[in-house]
Amino acid sequence: MAREKWYRGGLRFECTRCGRCCSGAPGYVWVTKTDIARIARFLGREDDGLDKGTTRRVGLRHSLTESPDGDCVFLVRENHTVRCSIHPVRPLQCRTWPFWTSNLRSPDAWNEAHRTTCPGINSGKYHDLAHIERLRKARTCEDAGV
Image (cartoon, rainbow, N blue to C red; front, side):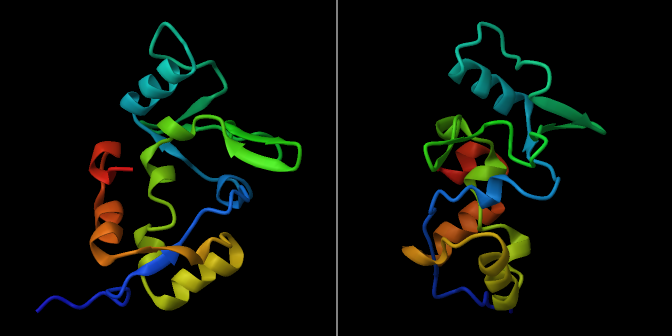
């Protein structure tokens, strides 16, 4: 019998637009060629590429770059607000936050993500087990359905 998920009763999460998940310590926001083309079209580029400095190659993969202060290159801070300038076409990794396997490993991991990164965890909209699992297992933006 498969082990029951500790979050089988669902979880609460609603983005507060604080930008903390899009900034901080260096890391990777993985993007596929499809993501890059989608972002390029959204930005009005005629080709399917992005400007140099927007992505970086890491081994065989690509990641979005970060500003020197640790913000994602597409994070915009203005007039005391924070927003993603490519939100409608953001990569899968961004779409599925905070329902990542690492955050769902245990209640402690979930609460640690809330404490250290995301004030939207444990508040706001209710997400049922089916929705959480769809996001956790998604391999493409279409799989995620968000």
